Image (cartoon, rainbow, N blue to C red; front, top):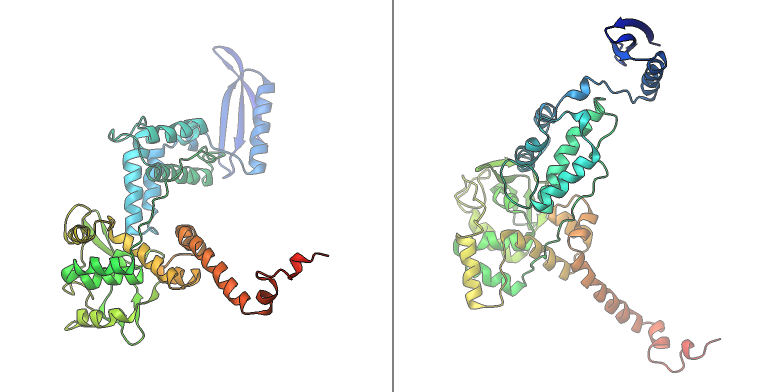
Length: 388
């Protein structure tokens, strides 16, 4: 227990409370006008310590800027591209608004207002860029919430004011799926990049995974590609790491690619890159010009109904073609390298919905060839026409 003592001040008699913090360091608080006030304060301190809810008022003065800098340095587990996105969110949105504010003074309502203002373009940011998308808002909020979680674990605050904040909903982007004929047409316009384009469309590899393939990852006998590396551009530099989910995987490819992949691999050593010159990772195609946009433009000139697509849409195309060929959700998950089958279902719910019609048709075909079909289908003498 702590102690209470009185002392004389210029304003009269006052009381001081001495107590020990959870780390056993002694501290005090003075200025109480009555002994009763001092006793109530001391009781609240002892209760908060017993419940594990004690917050050091001095520790609560640390700013988001100070704690955020330390938190950022600890995010070494993130993929380079993810870390880059987090640092941008911190620099542009979180630090300008919260950098000088002590963690103990932040209120839930203030966080909610900030989230809303990011969406409308009224929030304080590094530069006035107007309303931000739901993705950007959620990422910025996530950075602030994570920093406040650190403050909570360090017992600088008793609760995280960023929790239970209403966030904007992400608009689900409509997927673009090419048909086999459209894939072929696009490949014809891609010139020397045709094999790479076909590989993307028929394996579902991410761009970084495809350009990270090495000759030793190609098995033409088993029709497999071993995905072990992911080459992504971060801050203008290609960074090579593990695949997005950190796990390597074996991805099948159709036999139509065998000859073309083998041709691509000619005169290369096992450790050289499969695509390109073997030494340099191919850069992600520009969204505005370059070989991929040129190929799409040529395809649209031939077929006006050809959709505007990006390299990532070829990943969606691979999922669509696999599902239409009869692949189940688990097979598609493994092919795409999703963390779970539920993620595959969430991403391609529209494709699996189409499969429901196929299920009904298949069930009907099998039922009609059995006694059930003979008894029930289009029969005026079936059980339903003679209810009990």
